[in-house]
Image 1 (cartoon, helix red, strand yellow):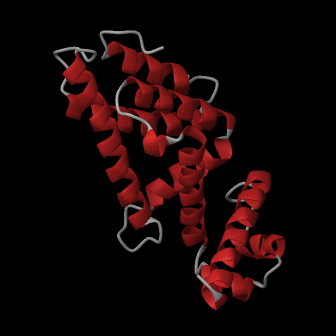
Image 2 (spheres, helix red, strand yellow):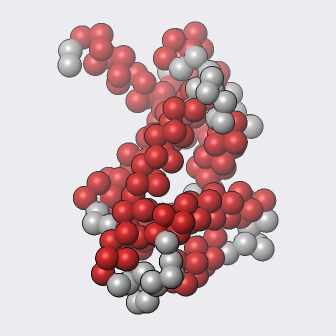
Image 3 (tube, one colour):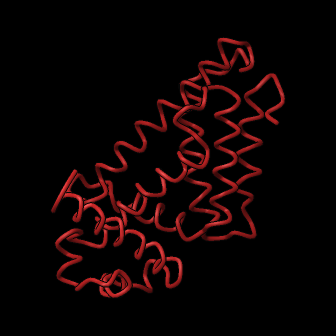
Length: 197
């Protein structure tokens, strides 16, 4: 990796870092690409060269967040089963402490249903991986008898993902009325024959 390619990749990373800082301070609607460009030390036209829309930049922000999650929790080497379910609860706790990134995720997920949206492919990959990982965890629990025998692992996995997304949106709207972490923990525990924690 040399020359212009390396420089371009580093510039993209600088822009993403600047965007994260700006969005944390001003929020999604209170900021603009011009503010991000200024923070990154680049012209607005230069930023558009790398990220042609705010949505494309936000998708890159979410991909950075996924990479940081993997590094922080070592998700890439986590075994399916109870450890993965505990990781999901830990991620929910992290999200509660960082509502800005949850706001970006919820807004972008709603907008990205269109195949032409810059973040569409990101969410296609994101949900595919989420389904595979959660299903693998429930299947592993079923194989060891730690999942209740009347629970279908595939239904449980899809229900968990839907519940998580729905609770996140509700929590952002009425944080005092929704216990995001507690509700997810209760749901998961209701499916198990052993203590979750």
